[in-house]
Length: 354
Image (cartoon, rainbow, N blue to C red; front, side, top):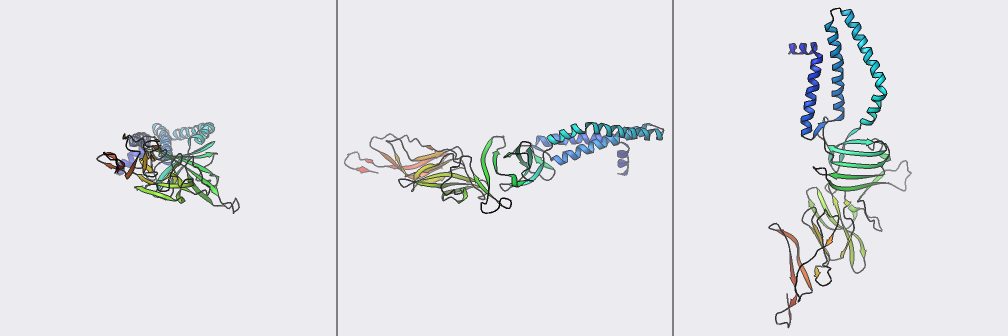
């Protein structure tokens, strides 16, 4: 072991090149797994490589000259030359570091730990990557946080935050979800001392007259899919014993909710609701499907609860005006089914049968 250490000390330049080669190979292998070193680790590796190169060059100069006094003078002059070069290049190095350095923070978002990389020159923008410990992080952006205009670090200056829009991405980089978080201050307290209150809502949230938050709205139906919770919530009352409803969702087990529906839909007070998956849901207004006026009263969503469309019921029977839904849509043998009944004239046309 001592012999190896002695050889390493005598060949610092060779060891430095080996260190650079191993570092590059390790970075490449991690990149194939969508992982990379944290920024501070990369800076440390670069500093080690640079210091090792300088020391190795000086060692080679000192070892190749028999006149030790001459070797020392050459080494000192070399160091002075390197320092002068660094001082001359310092403005360019500083300019490069200002625009290439992005602060990193280990943070929690929606109950999950991320590495948050801050990019804020004229606009505060944060990318959230998978956290793999103090040395490693993911290469794919999982969440993007748009904190609005201003060259500030939201984690260092939280009082500057007014609003943030989060965009969630899947493994292929496609947008999976969005939500907006607005920070409002309490009106009763002085501006300087006010604590901030978080309000979550969707981009196009239509506020009710009481300004009810998504998590506080009256829940008409709820279903859980692991940590994801989807709800039908009441927005407001309307004429004719009807109500406006929309869908709210939580991805952190119910800690926070946000509105996902682009627009609320109108249903009766007796409406029934259901979700078969996180993206496939339905709302049955009265349970009666009219075949004459084209208004089935059955709303369907299959795009993540953003929009609802009126179901088109294909049923031809001249003796029937409407169909009654007996059982909400359900899955059976990979088919979507719905049990209904009809009330029509009997074959003798002297009465009705179900």
